[in-house]
Image (cartoon, rainbow, N blue to C red; front, top):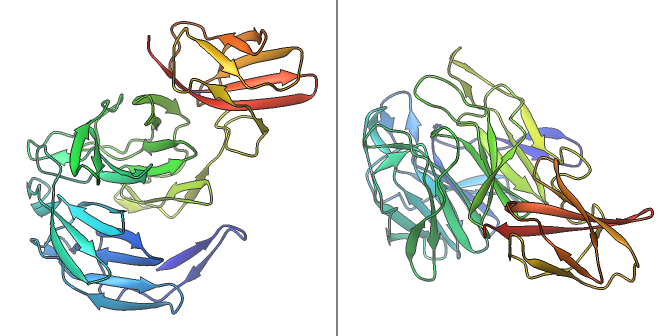
Length: 342
């Protein structure tokens, strides 16, 4: 196991996990890492659970996963619990599973959880944002690749189906949270690696294009966010049956692209979310004349106009997660808008 240092852009080796595996489940709770399930070789499935303490750089074995030994699960940490569900107990054609379990680190116990209410699957990806968990894609028991995105609410204990992925259905993609969006991309079909990447806006339940992944693979690789920065890489290249070791950071494609806090002063706008074509109010900036411009997630200019007495009418036909940039002389302000179709 290796740890990545953002400040120095370097890797350092850490204590190895006592039991090697691939396609495992992983989540983080209370500052500790957990790894369970997974596959050894081509046929040996696992159900053990290991806890990693980064302070002591050591591993401890915890209560075994209570379901069938499996690999290729969905997994996430939410509300103080770790969740593991779905997965594969056989070959590439299954059998696949639909059950789920919840781990409590305080009592070191597992209980039954509510599984994703659709076809059994493996090779999904997951992320957590705004207090909810999202599970995407995978290969279903029908042997079709899924374009579905599901969200789990721990308060209601319910799953809901969201807007489908707009590109080729896939399994084992990268997935992470970046600014106010989720990012999903790469992955595989039956025979080829995929490299396209997409943003998902949870407020508008809408998708938008992002720069394609420039690396070797990122299929079944790694993806994570630290301190507002987002990374993806490693993985496996299907065509050559080779592993990849490169790591890439997703950054703003232009000065007007994915604007995270700190790029320029922030403008306060309401309502937000807003309907396309509706009147937008902008908090007083004490600037007599403001130029306005809307950009998409790739930094492409979509529309230009002016702010009149703190009011701006958005153009009809534009929707999704957009960036509003306001400029006057040498100063600029920005705001992220979730624009809903009218």
